[in-house]
Image (cartoon, rainbow, N blue to C red; front, side):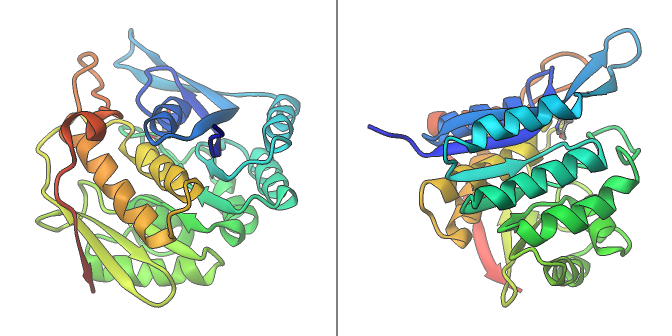
Length: 277
Ligand code: PXL
């Protein structure tokens, strides 16, 4: 038996909920073979309120991992935390040269609870090197505003405008993750394919334990595409996967509660409705 090969080019979240840890757990759950190219290592300081430290890896080590993984003939690749313009350019060019069929860009700019953009130049580099190669780009509200050069959207109407702008920058499909900041009574994400705006909704879960939700959503889209789903169903099924993971989020310690990546296969998924808006 062979498995579809999925690659994540992303950072290590030592706490295990986000980053490559989220991606690998999700790839495994969805029956794909996961590979990694590590870009940064994120640690948390237990003596300073769990504040984050981000250590970028030398570019040669990043390049050599990407080359190793792509040489195996990857079915779908996802990018996550890419901390420098050089890493973004390297990843974008290598993905192009490899001709990988499915490319999911999760334009990670901040970690939850941290409000500084990793490095201001990275937004321009993502627009130049990643968006034109994206089959799907998955910004949260803040990242969507940054990519579009607009203010952070706060309503579904504003998400639609921002999604159209990001699509015009070359991403074939845009998924804006609504998250907690969205003024809406449901947990809502917007999918835009250049023609139709589709609102994906599930019941809100009243929880702080949602660390890694964004990475998990994008990783599930990646695995679903590798497994041959069309883009729309890859996104809708990924929303079910992450809604289950959030509904079963749990407390790791007093600072962080990760989603439960394997929740859907164990407990099933909450309902997700889709409405053209
Ligand atoms: O959730 C964004 C994210 C992505 N990648 C890595 C992270 C985080 C947040 O902690 O550590 C490696």
